[in-house]
Image 1 (cartoon, rainbow, N blue to C red):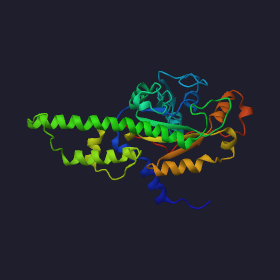
Image 2: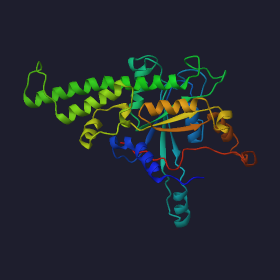
Image 3: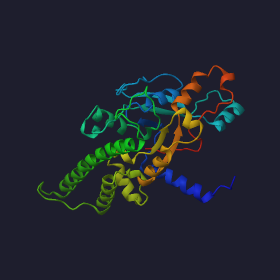
Image 4: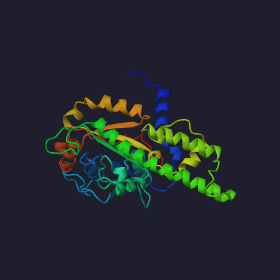
Length: 310
């Protein structure tokens, strides 16, 4: 195996941490699964929580109110410390996971159950964007065919359209604030601060290009402070999770993976995690049969992933 390129790893870590700029310090972390209906959100929520908390059914909008569960974060170092020092109380880190109902095209304008769903997304700290890359006659697709690139475009477009609507309100609110501060009439178009205008223009350009705001590298810290108050969905950390068939997952290949990687790179970059709900469900169902589990490889989020949120 060739030696690891430390500089490349450092650059990748910095890229993945970019969204942390828009975060606020909190004592918990809540991530939301976002995607079209029937891509595996409820199934994966159940698997991460270790129980069937969310309703996993083969029809669109089977999840209406968001289901929230807590998953213990695996940490061998924490386990070692607890075993070594045997404290009277052991409280592991937990990740709150929200199974948000599926979005469809037009959700930003209220299609399906869009407005409620988008408000649920706004309430989480970060996004697991789950996309379907498996064929199945038993699991219907809301658009009647499997095309992860089309699905990525649909979800990203809806999130950006919602942010575009939010930006319209942001600039009007800022103008009202400046008018009030300077004692100007409502008919006057007031001059806005340089930092505010610069931050607004950069966000508007990104959103118009269907690119998440959090992926942009060249915000100043003053602009970041301003953008935090915009309340944009696309400033949230986002990880792309590709739900593959068991067959493709085990052979570590899919015709969609290179296309998904290219799409993500063209839209600001981001981390991609291939997995298979089908395989994970089979493994989970064998949890009490250690002999049957032997030789199987369980896939989980890599230990090095760290997400800083507001």
